[in-house]
View 1 (cartoon, one colour):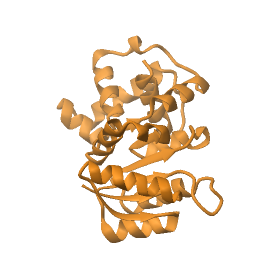
View 2 (cartoon, helix red, strand yellow):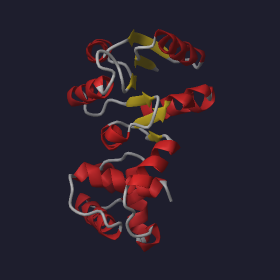
View 3 (cartoon, one colour):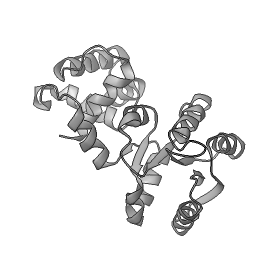
Amino acid sequence: MRVVIAEDSVLLREGLARLLADGGIETVASVSDGPALVTAVLRHEPDLAIVDVRMPPSHTDEGLRAALQVRAARPDFPILVLSQYVEERYAGELIGRAVGYLLKERVADVAEFLEAVRQVASGGTVIDPEVVVQLLSRQRRGAPLDSLSPREREVLALMAEGRSNTAIAARLVVTEGAVEKHISGIFTKLALGPAPEDHRRVLAVLTYLGR
């Protein structure tokens, strides 16, 4: 596996590269700002990017914006976002558009971190438990999950794995129209009213993960 690291702290950047190397994962580029991340991904075509949310010059959301720029160019490209704190302002967008979001403290558990890297690179979804807890605490909960039908539960579980409607339909051997109908039912039962589609999908998954 080949990765690009985008982190402005030299110590953390080098530490991540060493941990990855010990796990048999090659770091093909290590950069300190958003534009360099975009350039490195397009140049090296790695299997994954590990990105800090806050990077120069303002240390607010440069990493996130660069990650979204990468995804605009390569929509299915796996990105694992790291953050010092739960970024509530951006968390919904992170989870909706990226496939992994971990707090930096999780890196201390090397085995868990490497497993997260491999899971995200293979198309899976990894969301830090603390992120889920904090987001759920500020989001209005809808109907309980036990109001969902068995099929709706299956669809929601696959949504939580980061699967698209097309992939869910193939997995369950149903039409995409049937999947869309089940998802609509999930939104209704979880009291997730009209909103941008990705946003409601994220909230449904967060409810599932916090069950």
